[in-house]
Amino acid sequence: MNISIVTQEDLQELKEFFVESVGTMLKDHLKNHNQLNDIVLLKSHQVQRMLGISPGTLQNMRVNGTLPFSKVGGVIFYDKQDILNIIDDNKQNV
Image (cartoon, rainbow, N blue to C red):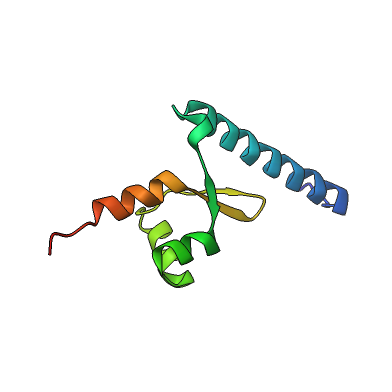
């Protein structure tokens, strides 16, 4: 039975690897977006204000797939166009 000891340096390397990997995935996603110059990324608090919702409601929208997001280094980003699409999809004729 092999015993491995994880050091602080090992954890730091793992963290750096994950942050770099997520950053690369986000860059790839943005490259594949047709209108790269038109992309505006918003943080959670901005989306909450824009939609007039609570942090819990925003989390539910992420969990149930209503709102796509990207997470980089612990910060969650949303594409402004996705937010505008949700608003447009939920328009009601009164």
